[in-house]
Every structure is written in structure tokens, then in C-alpha cells.
Length: 312
Ligand SMILES: [Zn+2]
Ligand SMILES: [Zn+2]
Image 1 (cartoon, protein in one colour):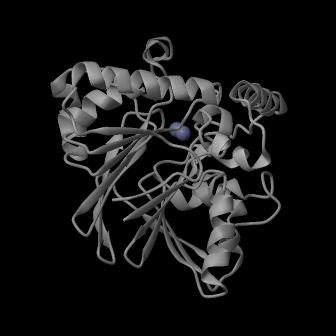
Image 2 (tube, rainbow, N blue to C red):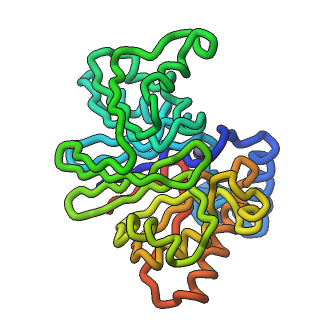
């Protein structure tokens, strides 16, 4: 299974500011002076070795992950990141029909508001199926493009599959399982299995009772996943301050991933208030936590960023 992240921000799209870009350039130039760069040919390697938060950005688009499982194209959530995925698909398919299965965790804006800008949706020959357990899925999505909110209605390229809570089904030879998460208005995790590899996408979820018993239904759903994509919007202290906002943190994610025997854990749904430096710090602290409490684990941690891709 091939996985690529197109939108990793939670709540609202958060473009890099001019001030943040300038600060990155200033820091890079400072480090270049310190390193004694004397020739243009040294620049590419110097840039490659800069700290991640200086040379890159997590990105500002909201939730969207592309999955290629054999010949099946699945898309997890349709936040603003799906706009650029749509352009990529047009280039990749070169006029051939796009057949995509779009799995929605829920209908909060940061998970659906890229749909009107998903260019394959403009061509009725494309087959775009939207799935989700949110009650009244079709009217919610069509309502987003009512004339009060958007100039053109949803196109006939989109079809709907209303899922029941806890639904299990197949898309070709891909097995899809769902589970309700704890989130205001409800959110749903997806477990996707193909060719003996399993991915779990569990975003927009809060775990208030951290006892093993209370977490067991979730760790059972995550069990032995090769990849867990996890809502780590907050730091633990914020989880106390923002109780019932419906989000989790990296450290709870690590505890659950270890309990479940997960192999790779990706933190996503980054808070709009967190800059790249802060996200780097969170990953570093998460790795320190893992080293202290589970030094022998094979679990590996990653920070979701636009363009991050992996194969499991
Ligand atoms: Zn969200
Ligand atoms: Zn939400």
C-alpha cells in the first residue's frame, strides 16, 4: 500500500506566513555564514542538511491522505489538501476516467471543504464515491454547495454510500472496517487492509479515560497495524485545558500504539497555532518519551507533512 499526505492541518487551513518564511530564510543564511559556504555548488547539500523546520514546512492544508492499494485509489478525508491531489490525479490519469473511493471520517469543515475544489469532480465521466457513517451524509455534503455557501452545486460525478456505524465492507480486494471515535458530532476511524498490510486512520478523537479497559476497544481496532495515522492536535496539558474539544496528543498515541503492537505511528491534524519549530519539538519529545519508556520497541514515529509518502 502506498500512502501520501496532502493535508495534515486540523481545524482550519493555515498557510505559512510571510514572517515565518522570512525567519526561515534568515536562519538558513545565518547557518550558511557559520558553515563558511564559499561556493554555490555547496548549497544543495547544505540545504539538505538544514534542520527540518528550517528547510521545510508541515504545510497548511487540512485533512487529506491518498492511498493506492493495488489498483484501488482510496482517499481519506476531503479537506483542502484534496484540491492539489485532484490536480495531481488529472496529470496522472491523462484524460482517462478517475475512479476514487473517498472515505470521510465526519463532516466537520476541515474534512470536507476541499470537495468543491476537487477538479476530477467537474467531469461527470469520473466515478467518485463518497463514503461515511455521518447520518444524512449526502444532504450534508450537497448542503455545503447550496447557493448560500458556494456558487455551483455538487456535480453528478459524486455518488454516495451511507455507511452504518461499525460498517465492514470491501472495495475491490481492499477490506475496510470502521469504528466510532469520541468527538463532538461523532468521527469514525477506518482500518484498511490490503495484501496482508493494515493501515488505521484515527483522527479527531479524544481519549478522556486513559485506563487500559477504556482504551481496549480502540487498541483492539489498532491491533498490529503496520501504520497508524493519529490525531495529535494538542500537547497533553492542552488536552486537560481543552477537554471535550475532541482531540488527542502524541503521548497518548504512543501508549496506545505500543499496547496495540503498531509498527509506524504518524502524528497528524496539527493545531493551526503550532509552527514548524513547535511540531519538530513535539516529535523530538515523543521520541525521548519512547526511548525512556520503551527503549526496545520497534515502533517508529513520524510527523505528517504535505508530500510525506510511505509504503507499507
Ligand atoms: Zn478535524
Ligand atoms: Zn472534527
